[in-house]
Amino acid sequence: MSEVVFDRNAIDATNVVDYIADVFARRGAESYLGEDVTMAQHMLQAAQAAERSQASADLIVAALLHDIGHYSNEIPDSALMQGTNNYHEEAGANFLAEFFPLSVTEPIRHHVAAKRYLCATDPDYFSRLSEASVYTLKVQGGPMNADEIAAFEKLPYLDSCIQMRIWDDEGKDPDRPHPDFSHYRELVQNLVQR
Ligand SMILES: [Fe+2]
Image (cartoon, rainbow, N blue to C red; front, side, top):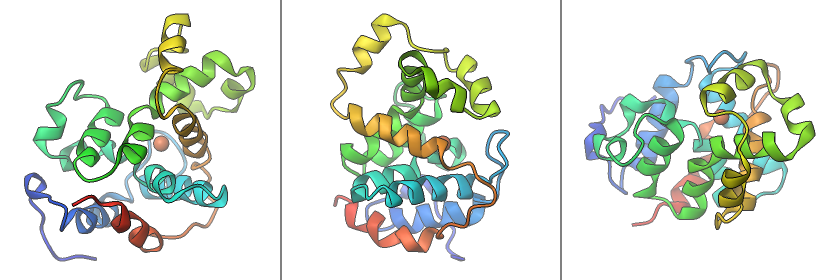
């Protein structure tokens, strides 16, 4: 584990991957919203699901980092101040947008909306949601209405957003072994824009 103490408001392209690794190491064992997996298990299993689908590197990294916004006290104030700062998907995407391409950050930004979209458009999807995810759906606004569906379907990364959501839902198995962060570290590093 890193001994470096990071200043969250001094993250740059040279240290962002060290910082993310450090967040996984320090905060990964925290519980994940009423599920039987930890936060690290959840994100690592989502990345594993993407990898098993032979997804592109940007989508594997999106899956790996999609819930980093839950650690809002790890995210620079500048990212939290942009827009709807209490939403973990926005907070995470805003933080990462300084360093990663839209192909990584947009599926993260819309992964909660994708759940609301799938609940409205895929009759089987709702029945597959975990109990905790059914609960948060209500807090997040419930299934989309027709106007919201139409707007969502115009997103440039629509397919990636939907796929990201399915991997998210697959990252909740307490018994499934998965690689650790170091397995994905090079993929993450290669996507950092300087
Ligand atoms: Fe998630």
